[in-house]
Amino acid sequence: MRNALRAEVRRLANTVLWSWEGFRAAWATEKTLRQWSLANVLSAALAFGLDLTAGERALILALGLLVLAAELINTALEEVVDMVSPGHDPRAKKAKDCGSACVALAALAAGVAWVVVLVG
Image 1 (tube, rainbow, N blue to C red):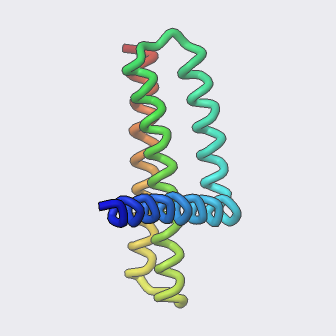
Image 2 (cartoon, rainbow, N blue to C red; image 1 turned 180 degrees about the horizontal axis):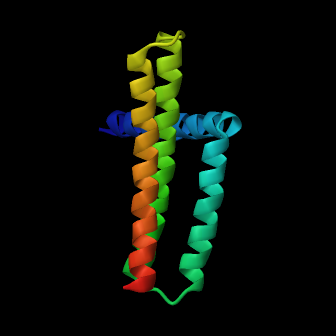
């Protein structure tokens, strides 16, 4: 039992480490991740600066994190597509465009949430 617990703790530690390494790698090379991160910081500051309910604040913060997650998925997708298909291929373009659309939809969801919270 003790060995199984140690193995799980080790797996969790590795997962945290690999996730941090992935974020750092994307941060170093992806301007859009840095831009969305800045937008997230500003959005969070505004969410805490305004008189919002806890639920409204949670929605805004969670959707902001979702935008970052979508950007990381898009970055990973683009890296794999570039590795597998270095030339121009319509399927590679479609995959990259779909990844970009994923980020755009997540950002749109965050924007809609802000509009509903502020106007509603």
